[in-house]
Length: 68
Image (cartoon, rainbow, N blue to C red):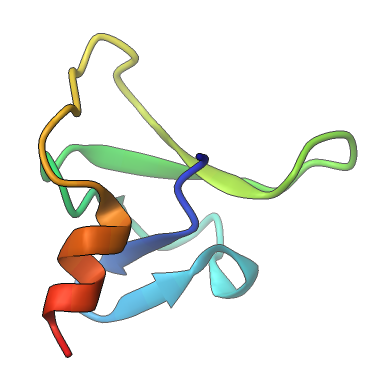
């Protein structure tokens, strides 16, 4: 599943639909830098800036749900 939510530089939870190119985002799992991908062909999602990062711990959905 593609990443749909990330944290901005202030620690706010930001859905991909609300993401902008000007803000910086981090991954819930590895704290790696994420880039919003909002093209016209694929589903909008966040992508890791460094593709070599191995995010295989808790999913972003699980970490996000634990906040509530």
